[in-house]
Length: 254
Image (cartoon, rainbow, N blue to C red; front, side, top):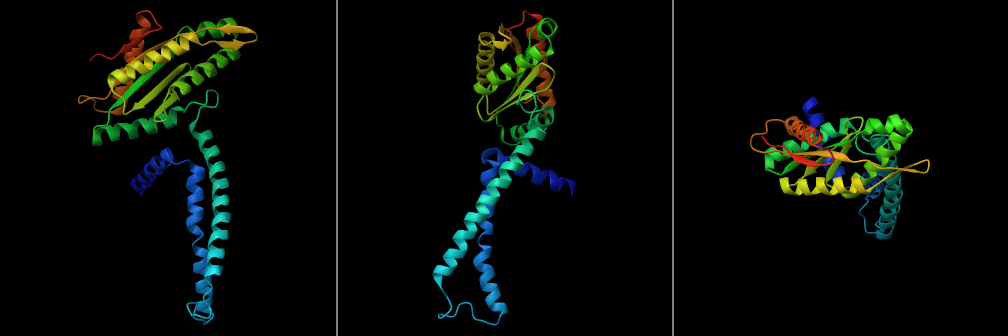
């Protein structure tokens, strides 16, 4: 039973990844609308009437029942989907940065690694750590540090494609799951993000706070056994960037 629930959850996640939840719920409502004319046919049959008798069949009545019920159910489904999506985002997104949280990141990393094993889809991990972030907190305070995290997260989201999952995995650590992304493409993405973060600034009480970040890139290959091995390789590459000067991108070398 647990395996069935996990399988259903994965299938639902794949659907909602491509179709917004409100539209999905609206489509469910439209399908349920077919129950209105079917219900009228059933009521006539239970009453002993012939619902398909030529003198009783009114096509306009069935069109009216279907269309009006479809509009009502679709609108109701859309409203429910919007509320459900808001609740889902609260569960899966970091409240400060609006990036995905660690819980969602773990689930998606496992799913994408499974897809890599099954279909050979390229998979890359980009680990990001802000340089000297403690100095920002010590100099300007933790609220300024929060403003910097928000600003950097906004830069990351604006430079990522829809298929790339950006998450906050630590205090000042972010990570990107780059799906269908080759090693070189992941390096280009990391470099683009590094430059964008370096050129951006966070405004705090009239002061512009500048910061840089160190990046580590790793890909899943034939030697990769688990999803978290790729993550650890990206983390190792990021620490190499830290130890060799910061504000740079390093690629994991086996």
